Length: 218
Ligand code: E4P
Image (cartoon, rainbow, N blue to C red):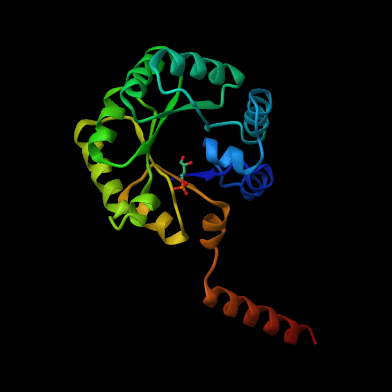
């Protein structure tokens, strides 16, 4: 499973990248605003900084929702760096734009996906990634991981090459459950990635090994 980090914070992206396990980054307009990145020039240069740091799979989301505008904006984003993946919302014109980008060699990530039907459309349109938001589904009292299982199953039935990118991850267990369900990618906050490290028996075991080693040195 690929690991993406779900943030526009350069320090957090660098920390995950330095761990050596990072395969990409997802951003969205809310995450960019959270970092105080506003105005087209700053937004574009921030995407370039992320691409230069990580080198692959950097999702940059369009703001447009109308076909021609999505295509214009997506082309501009794609020209920034070869690592850019144009993130397109699951709306009617978005599906049409996914097909256009696919026909014109521009990589895409279909975002705001909450059902298997939407995921089916994204795959038909040739999206490279589909992003079901599992945390938001859980927040609405449904089961986000079940949706991942359903999409993985459907894509397997037909050999769709669209990668299932589990998004809106809230905790380390979400990551493990998505891996069990066969997600191709998980995009996670840094905290959830680092949460995978934790086990009290590891801490206890390490402390014991180190104290026994110290005793052996006396
Ligand atoms: C995915 O690409 C989105 O940026 C993200 O995972 C949304 O997560 P949230 O529900 O925590 O906002």
